[in-house]
Amino acid sequence: MDILKIMEFLPHRYPFLLVDRILEVGEDRVVGLKNVTVNEPFFQGHFPSEPVMPGVLILEAMGQVAACLVSRVPGLEGMTAFLTSVEDAKFRRPVRPGDQLITEARMLKFRGRMGKVSVTGTVDGELAAQAVLGFALSSNLTKGGD
Image 1 (cartoon, rainbow, N blue to C red):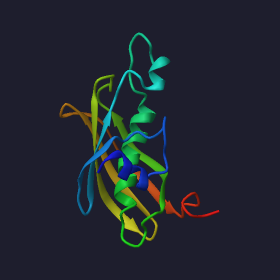
Image 2: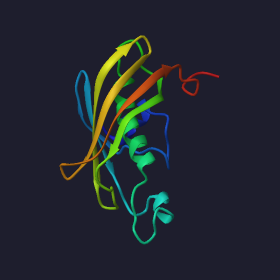
Image 3: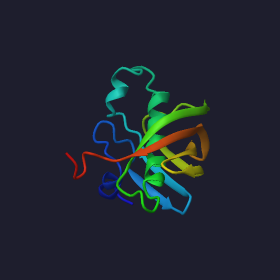
Image 4: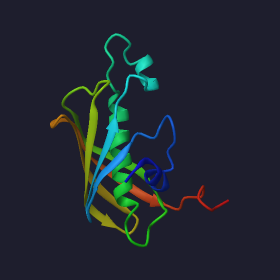
């Protein structure tokens, strides 16, 4: 799935669209890619002499990949996934300019419009971050609404 298709699923835009490509799509699993470049606006202040992607933005990137998974649930297409919880978040290695953050999102449970997704982020096959994200789906008023 290329960036144009991703933008159909996610309402995010620059500088907060943190998924460049969806590499794999399965029934209960999606794998996405974020190319981390030195041109990212957050690297100007985090940290100029030791650039590291902020953990909260790593979680955001992983959450956006997870949103690509949950927004594909039959009957709920076009809805927006909102983060409701972050559990067991762990950061194992820094994510730096030049890295490719590969996120795997797996559906753990889904009921009604709420659920949980397990996410892992790796760089060069090495675990960088992991978490369990809770979400709620809501109508997207920006697409064809008011």
